[in-house]
Image (spheres, rainbow, N blue to C red):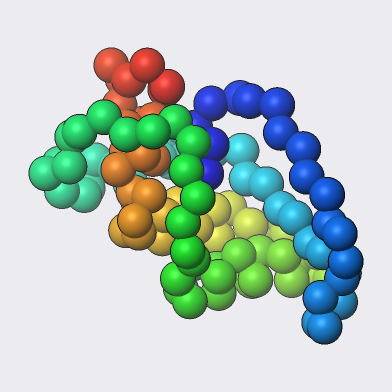
Length: 112
């Protein structure tokens, strides 16, 4: 997760056994993030790194999979994508990188 706009590049050296490399990006809606963050514990207020990598959870992966499957159902994107975005953000907030995302949502944050 990167909470700052930073240049990034990558190279997929070889395809895995399940097919070609796939990448996805979600531009965070600050209103949704602030609303979700307001309902969560404020216990973790420490500063965090602005860029981090962590293992995913099955719940997070499931939400992203459902979002990506919408590409096969374009007529459903307008209705379902706005419902999946808060779930994806919620899964990050509940995970090991939740503190980083909560810090980005704070009004006084250097990375908001």
